Structures are given as structure tokens and as C-alpha cells.
Image (cartoon, rainbow, N blue to C red):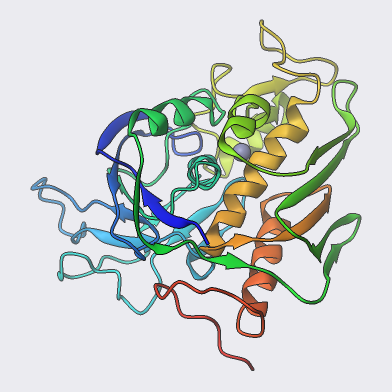
Length: 316
Ligand SMILES: [Zn+2]
């Protein structure tokens, strides 16, 4: 099995959160072997806010999934064990929109990483993972002690929610077949087939695909406190007939490609490389999270080289 890896040096970048609209600073720092990918929600640095608490660690794992609404939001796990500074833990510290960064980390086969976040959301950048690929590459990479955890299943898993579904079958390596179907002249039915995943392929075929949204939804999203940082510069925006971005699309099927990026980011929450064939029809974060929870639940029964950082679920 291949060795674990982390980045060679600490890097920083900043940007605006798609949903919160807040300016956020991010620092990617090398992680220790077997520590996994961990977000660190930074506490208030002397700003005097009474409820800010200390730094809070939020591991990128299935148990930390907090919300599936329009993005993947992770929150501290309720037992308070993530109190990195040993101080009082403030309630429900969270990090939203982690999926594009996690997808990039997963594609780059980085096992251990600390991600310090000054706010509550990962910056949207240009709405795609391409700027994150660039930044992660600039951080270099180094191999570590310990082997990468892999994960396989014995039996197929199927989840259906109305006309949405996901099916997972045993496979030699990760393979993804994704289909979407939107009643819109620019989207319609789109399918994308990923027969294997590596860094180069992710960079070339998936990372540049941007988040998309519909102009008619903007008002409702804003009322729900979402998409407050959404701009034509970080989202493909469609009205009822066309794409409103002046430069158009990066691929005719940019929409389904972006869905695959989101799926890979959600898969990263397993903390192990799943050797499975995943077939998704009309997916979204809620379905993806149901899928990783089902995969997670099979871990205790499956043949898995398990990393020690996250306990496997106990059988009921
Ligand atoms: Zn996305």
C-alpha cells in the first residue's frame, strides 16, 4: 500500500465565502502521520468577543457532517474533544463549503493536513477547484510514515430518494458514473464517466468546472442566508434560457463535471480511499452524504486497512 503524504510547507490564501459573503483567511499546514485532514476553526485572536472560545478542531469525517444544504458544512462533534487549545469550546463552530478543497486534497492523495480557517466558510475562489489545485501544488508534497487507508465493500449499496439515486458496487479502484437531468435548455441530461482518478486528470477534466445556480433562486437563497457571496465571477448563473456569464461555459457539460467534484469532496469524508464504483443519478450533497454514511456504516464489517484516527462505527 502506498505511504501517506502531507504538504511540504505551510501556505496561505484568502477569498470570499460563497454563502456567507465573508472574507476568509486559510492556511494549509503539514499534518502528522495518521492525523487525517482536520479543519481548525481559529478562535478570536484578542478581539475581545466573549463567546469566541479557543481554536476548535473539526476533523473532515462523516461524523462531522452538519448540513447538506447547498454545500457540505462540517461542525465540531458534540463531545467537545476537538478543543485544540484546551479552553472553553464555543457552541456549534462550523466550517461550510468544504467540498471543493476536500476534493482537491483527495485527488492529490494528501492524507494529513491541517486547514486553519479564520471564518466559517472556505473561500469560493472562482467557483471551481482550479485555484485550489494551483495553491496545493505550490505547497509541495512529502511522503510520511504509515500507509494510506483503503476501503472496499462486499455487497452493493443502493439509496433512492424519489427520482434521485446512488448505487455503489465493489470495484478494483474508484470509478464514478454521474448523471444529471435539468429541465433547462443549457443543461438537460448530462453524464460523466470517471474510470479512475489521479491528480492530472482531476486538474484537466474536473477542477475548472464551476458551481452553478439559477437567477430565479437568488432571492430565496438570500432570504435563507445563502449565496450572499455569490457573484458572476464565482458562479455560472443561468436565467430561464441561457448562461448569463459573458465568457460562457468552460465545457458544455461543465454542470455534471462540477457535480463530480462535489461528490469527490464528499467522499473524502470517509478518511480512506474507497475502491468502489459509484453511480449517481440526479445527485446533490444530501444524497452524497447518505452515500458516505452508508459506506461508513459498512466499515466495521469490511476488509479495511483502517487508519487509527477515527473510530469505526460499532455494529447495532
Ligand atoms: Zn460545488
